[in-house]
Amino acid sequence: MFRKFFAWVQKYERHLSVAAMLGGIVADQLLFHRIDLWQTQAVFAAYTLICFISIPLLHWIEERAARGIQRPRWRALVPLATQFALGGFWSGFLVFYGRSAVLGASWPFLTVLILILIGNEYFAKYHTRLVFTSVLFFFALYSYAIFAVPVYTGTLGPWTFLGSSVLTLGLFALFTMLLRFLGHSRFKSAVWRIHVGSVAVVVFMVTAYFTSILPPLPLSAKAVGVYHGISHDGDIYTARVEARPWYAGLLGLPAQLHTVPGESLYAYSAVFAPIKLSTTISHEWQKYNETTKTWITVSAISFPISGGRDGGYRGYSAKAEPAPGTWRVNVKTADGRLIARVSFAVTAVVLPPVQTDKVLN
Image (cartoon, rainbow, N blue to C red; front, top):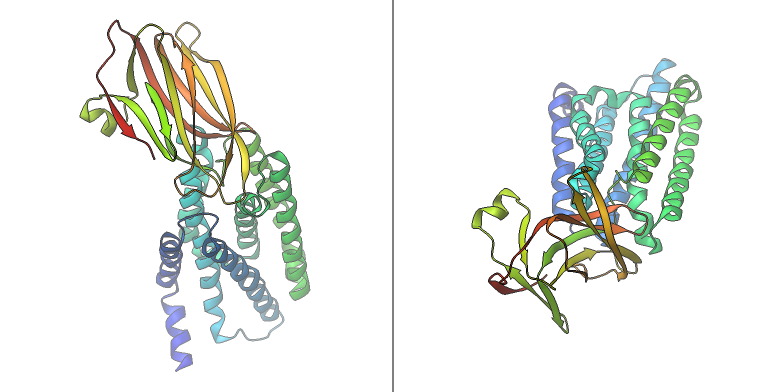
């Protein structure tokens, strides 16, 4: 019975590899709600453990095969396990990095994740190759550590990113030591390419972080907007909202705010952070200069936030008498990464527009 099963696996290996990848994606969608839940961390830990076992195991089998030892029948299952775990990693990253990203700033990083997710199936046959799977695993390990370390330490910033990098390098060093132990000759022929690929990943991730391309995980924006006024009574926040055409929201058009002399506008944000994480965010008010075709920072207001609330930590800032023109408010981390952005246009009027009250998230 086992012989027929493994023969069936070998015959339909390509179809099963697709099922393995889809299984990882479905598991992520069902299990990933909040980044700081133990279930989420357990799933990522399981993906890590699967790769830590399956990649060296296949390496050991192939090392023995090179010495004339017959491969076991269950060998075909090992690449499928690797693909399942790596597919789960990439789809999970798209779930969380996608929630955290502002497309205008983070599209290069998200594009890389999407290409790897697609390539994880397209290059299915390469999951039997040591260099390919090792470098992919290193990238997955790095991407996971970047948001896992802040969850556990309750900190955010360059030093936390550096800690994530050191932890990733340490774990991958143990991984490569295991590869060396299980198959020295095969590892020796591949080690320099694994190192080159790993260095390329480090360069990419460090560049993405310091150019603010990397989404600001584990932070994510739950709500953001600009209003004529904001008030709160206990836990209830209420905004004064100007009426908009029904199609404006569907088309993603910037808000048109009509202000009277002496009026202030208010930027509101609700930013999710994991439990125990405390950090500082800022509202950066910018006006577009039509002459120089650049955004000019008019003011920046910083305030602390704390994690734990599903709907995000709420806060707001005000800009007194904003000049007519095109504006935007960037919600940023203390290290300058973009959490959210809201664009709007200001038009000066004599009489205030019709406004309604809206309870905010």
